[in-house]
Amino acid sequence: MKELTIVSGKGGAGKTSVAASFAALARDKAIADCDVDAADLHLVMEPTIKHREPFSGGSKAEIDLKICSSCGLCRTLCRFDAIDKDYKIDDFACEGCGVCADNCPEKAALLIPRQAGELFVSDTRNGPMVHARLIPGEENSGKLVSLVRSRAREIAENEKLGLVLIDGSPGIGCPVIASVTGVSLLLIVTEPTLSGLHDLDRIASLAGHFGIPSAVCVNKFDINIEMTESIEKYCAGKKLPIVGRIPYDTLVTKAQIAGVSVVEYSGGAAALEVSRVWKKTNYMLETC
Ligand code: SF4
Ligand code: SF4
Image 1 (spheres, rainbow, N blue to C red):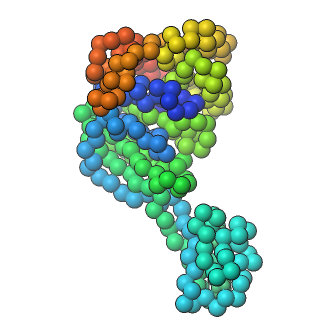
Image 2 (tube, rainbow, N blue to C red):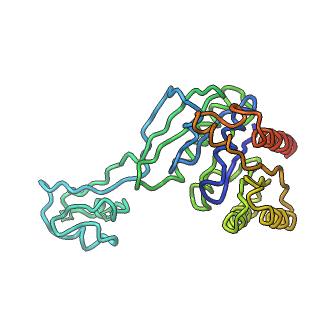
């Protein structure tokens, strides 16, 4: 079984648009939306949720004031100043380290697991999909990404599907590391801007660090040909194969508004190029 993750250094470069088109073009795959902080693949996949489960990202302390003797030990020990003078916990400051619970002489301080999000397993017109929602402000998105990936892998194994197609997390932090480590191939979608080149460099360095085979495609290449050429020069220097140049096409936005991928919506210029990008990416997948 192969795993393909589609990433970009930040949101808005066209990563999810490409992922949605690949979901329509690839055969025998499970889909994993690992962009759990700002999931939007479901907007064009129309998932029918078959299973949902709470995700507990960690724990927070709670103090039972009926038992608490106000000895003050927990306040002295808490390194995060999360306990106020009335022994109320500041949820944002509490790191869930458990020191207060471990040392409370009255057993009044407890560590309580908190729901940080929800995981969904759905059917879509293009195959099974695992996706999730992280409650705003909650942490541990890397852990949730790992869970989404592992559920999608389980489905692919059980249903004998040859591919897990992953819409990766943006950035280069913990969630994106969780969505790229150990995959067969990384497709980096970039845009022809200075920040696009900067983001590409960061994600390519990350991929190089983990030894992940990578390819690049430039989205909306024709909005800045000069910068597209700079990106291609950068890729040549890093021996990163370019699998396509997707043109700017208003049909991409129209497809999004219609709730489908561009390859399902039109046979226009972007749709044709995305189909070509898929063929080249699939060839690389088969040979890597
Ligand atoms: S250590 Fe326990 S008993 Fe003492 S103030 Fe904290 S919660 Fe209350
Ligand atoms: S769990 Fe740790 S961070 Fe949270 S209140 Fe207790 S000692 Fe402070």
